View (cartoon, rainbow, N blue to C red):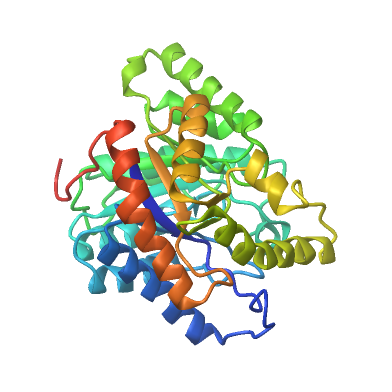
Length: 351
């Protein structure tokens, strides 16, 4: 199994102290978390894309380019690139540039994105968002593979023998399709023989397992070898200590503050208590053995080879967060790497 450290770039008050860091401080924290992830041995660092409150993740190419300059090995993921909102030509230019600056370490994860405010910002409607995502990806895909592209569609001006520069270092870059609930994204991934990344965060495992089952079904429908299907999955939080009781005691106020935040915004959390979340959600809180066992239970349902865990402290102290990530790499990751086979990530450079 491979492991990503992931952040969506939240800009929220500290769940326990109420302190709100400045945007500058938050960006420094995000970049530091990526550097730490490489230091500790994670395979990838993933940064989200959102264009509304409470996020600071509107420009993943800029953030990941800065991360690329400070790291040497770790794969750089988007989580997700919201192609339904973007001009695929401009997105290609940004990410092809990043691919060069990172030495071929880029991994793209695309999706339509969530959030009413960001859809309104880019004049995307509920009626056209899926068509925009599909059409944008079909052009985006060709741009990575063809030196000159002739194309026409509904949502941007046509191209005639267009040369879009720079040509990428990876030919082509690998594109994952992120999906929380939609069969549209799953079908698009299966049609083109691309990997799927299940959000696996908000709900119990059942709806995510159904989407992964559908992905594998559609994968075969489109004529691909079943052995080629590749799945990643998220987790809803992470904190490990040698004794499970200590992990639960420390994480409980953080979890309770998260529930209170959702309720304040008029949202009804699926899991109201930490005990329920530990039992039925993808949150990884407990001892190393408990977390290993839980990942195995999820793997039985999803068959995933890649897992993301929380990259940032999320209310923990810096010392607690680092100790927990060190414990992950010393006692959890080696067991899961040995027990759950995974295919290697690309090594960078032209295919």
